[in-house]
Amino acid sequence: MTTPLLNSLTIALGERSYPIQIGSGLLADAANFADLPKASTALIVSNSTVAPLYAAALQAALQPHYASVHLVVLPDGEAHKDWQTLNLIFDALLQNNCDRKTVLFALGGGVVGDMTGFAAASYMRGVPFVQVPTTLLAQVDSSVGGKTGINHPLGKNMVGAFYQPQRVLCDLGTLKTLPPREVSAGLAEVIKYGPIADMAFLDWIEAHIEALVARDVQALAHAVRRSCEIKAQVVSQDEREGGLRAILNFGHTFGHAIEAGLGYGDWLHGEAVGCGMVMAAHLSQALGLVDAAFVQRLTRLIAAAGLPVRGPVLDASDNAGRYLALMRVDKKAEAGAIRFVLIDGPGRACMRGAEDALVRAVIDRCCAA
Image 1 (tube, rainbow, N blue to C red):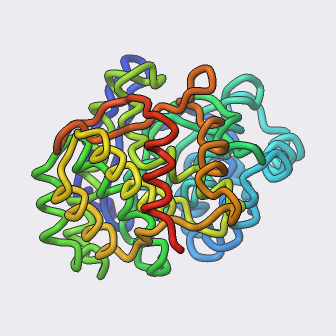
Image 2 (spheres, rainbow, N blue to C red):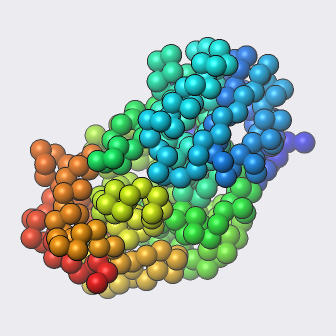
Image 3 (cartoon, one colour):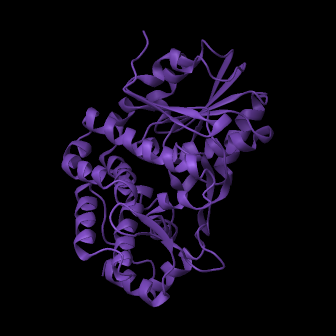
């Protein structure tokens, strides 16, 4: 029996266009994998948390379409988003004699999706892959748009490639098994779309934040679809982040510094982004782009989502200096100058720099004592 889709939309990238399918029970339905590139072999990439929950169902759904369906299970967590873990995927591909038509399936959250995509972009110079995101954060953000990569000890996502999937399959049923902390982390990436692009969506999130935290299926379906719609519009105009797409990194410059400064995995990515949005909003206010009421409104919503709104102290002797040093390694930095995604009035984002002294003052104001 074919599982009905709740929603479907398309990332419009010419010959690299692909659908995003949103519904419940999708990953167990063989019909959803019928029209992918033909191959004799498929490789599911998952992790030690997700694989026991969903790998068997996905394998069963893929078996009508492939002679062999293999599985590689990675260690779970952002701390393992590195060369050593990436090589486990290449080991599985080579040990199973996978060829250049082999299709990879990323079954997991953002880390699994990013690493599987990077492996697909690199193996035999490019093989097809499919995103099957199982976390809210991955469904609304990281699985869409073709950013793939791994972390380096000196910077997050500094090694990678732009490589688009064949399709994104968002099975809302997988969100039922998410820990509450992971739900909150995903909501950070949902919330960001409001200030940068759609204040009506921000109004809706505020009105439904309790339902989202409680994982109401209809609320989640709307949040995932609208988030994907906004990201699809941006990516279709700027696939390789030459300009417009950078607005999707609202909160990420401060957030990536938090992740790198604490050691990957201490805070979840969404937690760091949520706090980073508060810090970026304060910087926007300091530059005269938004008023205090907007900053307070956004801070209240981020807190209501269960996210931290005070930054950690990364260096007791010079906390702001440590943040600045880490942010200079950010991909958006140019010639050592940090460029921030800021709110240029509600519903609009811009990229601009700021004097170190002003950034230091914001960090001092926003970080825990």
